[in-house]
Image 1: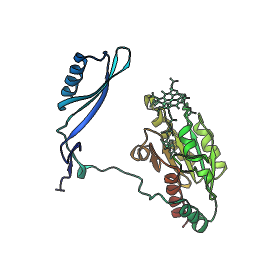
Image 2: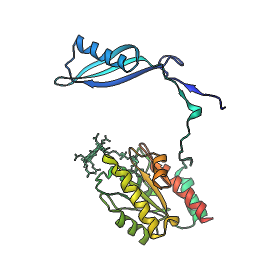
Image 3: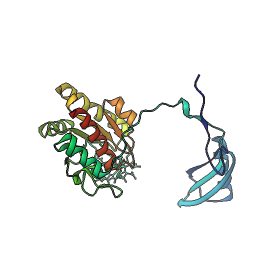
Image 4: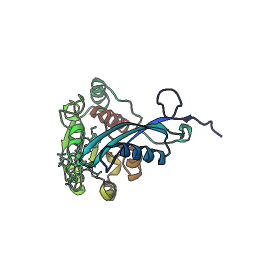
Length: 246
Ligand code: B12
């Protein structure tokens, strides 16, 4: 049996299990509301709850932060989760791999698909301005990036990607109501499979509620969540295309 690797929350010192929880209650701030917040935290299993914040956030609503002890521990050794393991390369490293190993432009086509109108995420990855000071794929000499924008149908995206000989298709999904992101993503994979060119293209799935495991489950090659930088994506794509080129 493998050794357990139990970890607990860190508050003031190792293993003290201190956590904080925040919530809004539909009451105005008062001594009674403070007590209600304390009881609410106790009911969730926090020990010795301390109401650290009690602030009115709208008429008749109060925002609370409660600090208290949690008895729970997590066994890290028992967790297995797939993750993108590609190291994020520098711009120079990426450009060099494309120039010396791939020896042609790497073509990517991206879109926010279905009824989803949120363009900011896909723009952050593809457009010149990028994200968090990290310029988008469009800014690399070695990439040719096509951004089709939002509300793009899977058929349109697949047709465009095929027409330009895309190495990778980047799908952004922000809206997750009624699991429409899963349906949209899966439908694209099925479409490309049915057209018989799945082996020729990398499929990347991204958005605030996307992770690598979900993307793999849906048939994509990788998933990218919140905080992804264009250079993370560029690194993954060039490493994969380099392997395919060999
Ligand atoms: C801006 C915004 C809008 C704008 C969008 C404008 C635009 N041009 O994009 C407008 C006002 C149009 C809008 C509309 C709606 N919105 Co809105 N919106 C937001 C908001 C405030 C910010 C989203 C954003 O821009 N984030 C910044 C970007 C940079 O982050 P990101 O998308 O996560 O992208 C990063 C990563 O995820 C990743 N990534 C993203 N995509 C991809 C793709 C690939 C391939 C890769 C590799 C990486 C990657 O890289 C990016 C950089 O790190 C969020 C709330 C929030 N604070 O997040 C709500 C939010 C997304 N919206 C929401 C909703 C419900 C709607 C509406 C349905 C509201 C309505 N009832 O009309 C409509 C839907 C319209 C539609 N048909 O899609 C909900 C979604 C709930 C859900 N999970 O389904 C949110 C979460 C608000 C909320 N709390 O309820 N919205």
